[in-house]
Image 1 (spheres, rainbow, N blue to C red):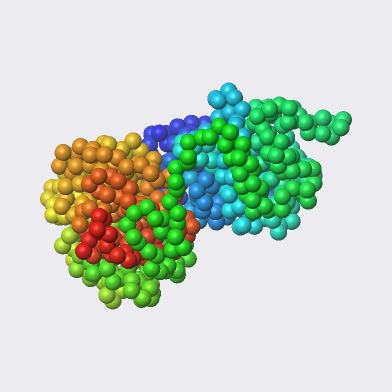
Image 2: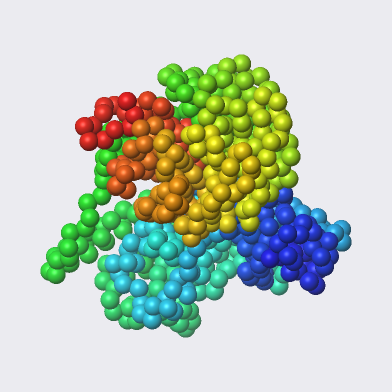
Length: 636
């Protein structure tokens, strides 16, 4: 089902195969990419929808300008909405809704009214803390409160370091995700710290300041906000979680006192004093910054641990200790060799030449860069795509490069010279993945238009258009014998196609969420695929039986690669890590850390000694094996 976002449309529900609303004519595929599927909430400044983005569920926020009666107020509202988009595109920490820089756009309704301002962000799964507390039926424990406070302060640190603050922290704006970690949502009222506050009368239709009563500090109610205003709201939030009562319950207007402690008997005096300091009436009485809060939380944890020695708990699991190079000492001995910088936006794809001496990277800055692996030297920048480059692939002879982009094009390049050979067109939506056949004769492209196309590299002629997936096709891979092609989709399936006839031979249905990535073992017998629910499936290509699943990532799995000897599997994730697994046993052998944002792609050299990772933090990292452990091998 497709949902029309035109506020004037009386019949917003449409079949999902339509491009335009049957009721009003509004386009249903927004920005050539996002298809709204249902309305989630409305009211106030915006309307929230769930959209499908290449099989991934995301959140669409549409500014509701009808709430503002003057042109000046509308302009200020648009400015505030644009600022929210700018904030989210700069914040890359797990636990803050992720937004691509290009995910802010405007759509013109068919009735020629003012354009709709839209932004699309990551859909945070889980339940907000207000609902969670109702489900629990009991107040939050102090131990869990300390743990959650630390998580939220680290998220606030990310926000404050970018010279922004949130301004609307409260239980309903904090999500408890399925893995138990917290996420901070609704950045609609953020402000630049250095920016002069907008006049309160322009901030809401009714002429009131944007605040949440009981959680907003006194200075914010008067139209002034500072960094410590977030700390006040954080303290009030935890009073609610520790007492199960709204903060206004404890305020005495006659004495101007906030009496909550007697309603939280499980809270220690030290912790209560700390929360009271967060909620001090004046910003100067609160902690100066997030570092000061984190230091105080460490002290409170030490006090709690000393108290718990009376009734000792089982020792906590020992966590791996990261080395200065960024490698966690839990597996194969890789070290960070170098970090490559040069792209102006997130790096989404990487590919290595057969000898492993040339690296190709594709980025959301619309460019492809070619690097010398040994020296880190940038050899050339290939320009020609008009939009983000989502995928690159290098042929087995090292001479041909293929690239796919959201400009709906596939380009074939001469890798040694950088010359453009072909531009292939035919897809009706962005190209998410490309791959070259083992002999380099064919190039396959996967698209959000739900199709796969197979082309001749030599002539650029279209050979097959493969149809059968119900949602966007996100990943493809040729089998080593070159006879079949495997594809993964947002419809949660993987399909195996005959390259002779173009027919679908079989379908793997082991995933419970949208498939994001795919790799095939060198012997062509095993497929490995990842999905948005943080699960890797290892399955048999002949029988389509699921061998086993791997879990361990705490974010969407964006890429997988199998070492040339077929012994090791490497995966990367939205959680900023690269994990190394034993493909035969499923054992986690190592975790590489060092990127500051989502790791979008990985590649392994044929000799198994070089591993490359690309991230939204705009960097590429080259990891080198310093020695070959006797019990672990990646290539020769």
